[in-house]
Length: 345
Ligand code: MRU
Image (cartoon, protein in one colour):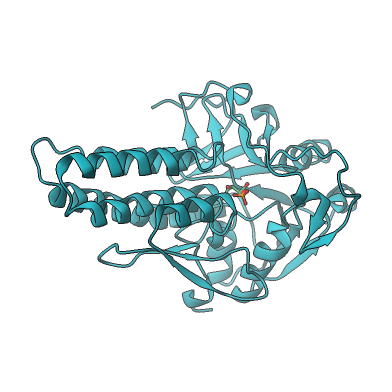
């Protein structure tokens, strides 16, 4: 299957005059590309999950800031500084849990701090840094795929939750990277995708991208994982991460913790796959993580159809924390890490 079958979340365009993303709110019905030039459009795209997945929002935030900087490059140094600083702050706070967003925005901002240089030179340095982050993300996904594949065998049936595939990165994904690597070399591998309520990233995105790439995929509702595991139909769990604390606690899409508990009960390996940009050694453990709370209406309705009583109380955290004790291994671009985990700068 040619690589063009794999659609990544963000694309790089030389000149950096716009942030180019796939509008993931339109999938699977339509594959629509957006070119965003305004800060408010970029922030809205991140908050409404047009672009989503930890590595992808990092890459998008970095490119977005570079786009703003390139446009401000003709302004006075003081105006340039003001525009770039406030854009960085707005992008950084668009979503709180995935550490990749703040990491990438801070990197691009820092690249523009060239003492005595003109705004044009500083903007060019920021563009180069955003391009580097994009390239690194593509390369990290490839390396995660190689390392992750060493943990799997042909014929395996893996379960995944949410979407940690190409649509969550600039490359071939994290949790799905070993799947793509094995599929490309002709190993049989099949995926069960949890639909992932409330926003259905598994149904809308994971099932779409794997199907398009020719990887066998079966969609499950979130409540099915337990009986699938008890019936011996799952060989391994592969998930991504939004933030990994120094002790190996993992924030990922709500429901991941439940899957980890089930995997442990059934003696099934639970693997977390993420780029090093998702490691956050400054956060000691999961208790210190800021978990994003989202709108109640995401749970009360879907696709514009009310599925619960209007006004019913709703609890809607976007992520949960899986304790390190339930994680069999963490796979990054740097290799495979087994417990006890201790990530440092
Ligand atoms: O709310 P989302 O869709 O951005 O949540 C995404 C996830 O939880 C992913 O599993 C995580 O970001 C890893 S993506 C490689």
